[in-house]
Length: 147
Length: 255
Image 1 (tube, rainbow over the protein chains, first blue to last red):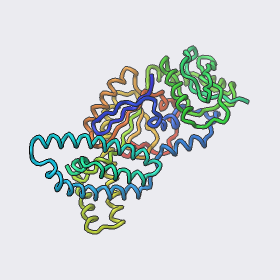
Image 2 (image 1 turned 90 degrees about the horizontal axis):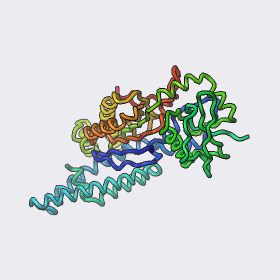
Image 3 (image 1 turned 30 degrees about the vertical axis):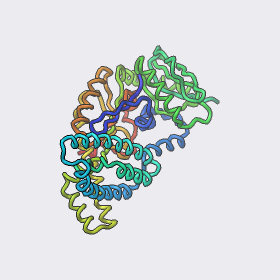
Image 4 (image 1 turned 135 degrees about the vertical axis):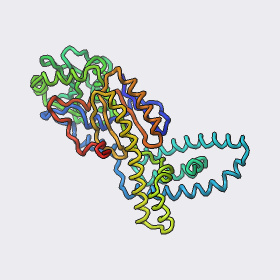
């Protein structure tokens, strides 16, 4: 028997990961029988691990990031209305190519974002920048945002 | 003086796993410390122990291996006893209560479901929420720090509401499959962190139902389902409150 974690993002169930600590560490450190006469292993060590998983983000930073994302979304919608017809024309075959391209780019963007989120716990601001780069580097993403 | 590391409590006669070993580097071997009908699974505690990744995994793996052959009351990570007599004294203190917990955990596993806010849902949210669109056009007309904060806060709350609604509906559907539930600690970005006590046979149906809910509430919340876990969240002795929480359960906000 081993513990697995299945992550569902949108309707895609990612392959279950085995033996990962991240998703259950709050349970292992916070739950389980406690006997008052026992000692807890080096409390300092436990607190450090806990702080590590409880990502502390200044709310203001998050709010500004969301506001920025709203503004960017409009910009992206504008760009799309100009460039997409030029790129793919009105032909039926073109539509399919576009759809496939969008799908691939969407996944790539997701993967990139996931990486950005991992970094986020340590440097939220840097991650914001990385996300922007991922978004601007992947034109398929523009279509999705404007749909 | 050598301290004892305690992994969990089992019924006396419970076979010890041969494969996994305990905390420390090199890993300390697991031992049984019986006292009447109850047995503590222990090892020597290495000097200068810290909450290291390797040790947390060793604790978890030892408990999973024990749970494969019968019920086990898992100790919280990092429980050290000064000596064997202390452990024996604890086992002998009202053993019937601990046996009752073991009975309750027999043939059961813990599954943990977390629901997280989906930041990608921003376009849908903006389409659905007139107030957000108003704030947004105000910001475009009069850009500024305060207006950005107001919009960002409204977006964050909107995304949170969306995720929470999906999480609560999912919870209400799968709760019927579980014997019991226990709220986990509140985590940033999580709108739901809930553990379920399940019969082993129910695990498959539980997973399938979760997958159904996920499909239904797609784009509202991201879900992470972990398990089977040792029953960390269901160790409270009868008449004893659940392990203390630092904050109110996340689900309370649903109402």
